[in-house]
Amino acid sequence: MNADEQHTHQFPFIKKVYPLLKKGGILSYCNLTSTGVLKNRYDSWEALFNETQVPYLLEAGVPEKDIKGIIIFKVYPPTECLYFQHKTAMIPIIVKE
Image (cartoon, rainbow, N blue to C red; front, side, top):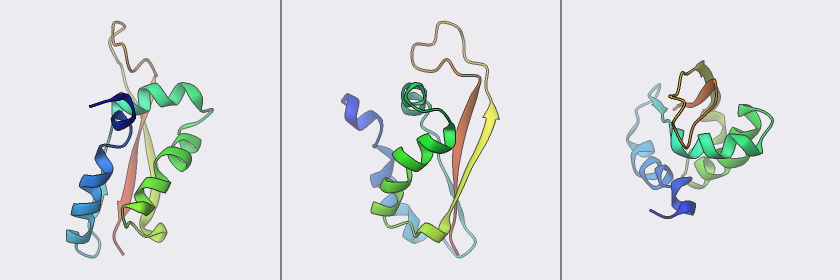
């Protein structure tokens, strides 16, 4: 996987599984390697999500109304971790309506 694929490899999977969700089904994913690197470029998790995730979710066929936002939670990465040194992380939430 190259550096560009690091940030987008989950979306082909989402494109395949999203149509399989039943009404009310929840799809969530976490790409800590990618978001850990990207977070340094954004002031907030919300900005990162809106700019680096939402366009790809829409391209993968997820309707905008089903993209419910993110959950932010505390994490405790080891100090030697090279790709994630933040005190919080995000998980996108998608609910098929």
